[in-house]
Length: 263
Image (cartoon, rainbow, N blue to C red):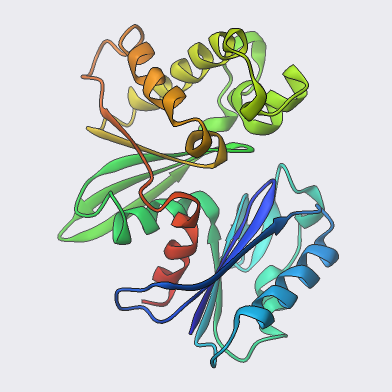
């Protein structure tokens, strides 16, 4: 049995899998993140123990930030500041006898989609549109994935602000006083053009025929994603506007991606 963990800026998702070959989720749980590392770690350990009905062969975890020391230590988690500098792999290895591996959460989601989802055998740019904005480009070379992570949410857009400060889930709540699920159309009329410009900035340097979206905002407001594509026609002039898709693995994409750390 393998465990996938996806730490996000809003919640933590954990799933147990029956194996690596044609994997299926056995059990799944989701709970709020506290931005209190010790408490979050305690909740993760409790949930993994609860979901582990068989001997564990590997635990993979996605982190919403930058890692170093062979992806064992969190450097910067912009939306989870209490996670900064934490040795997450070491702390999990102290509790489990199986291998533990970590990677950026958006990267895992993109790899999950490329390996098990709607991005199989395709090259694409993957955007996480959730609490923050993340990105990963997937290329193919000799039948293998070439993975390149980038940080679209931190590009400077309007008024000298970062993209995710305006259109990320946390930014939306801060700017409008409510979550994306409660926004009115007039609010979206301000958000979508900014997001479209941010995506255009990415696509002029990372041209692609396919863009796949994951993350809570995109998954819960898929109609806004497709409206984004229409707006892109006004901004992207140098390349054809790519096809837009919603992640076929949904909120489980990074959990499936965590399995690839053990292949």
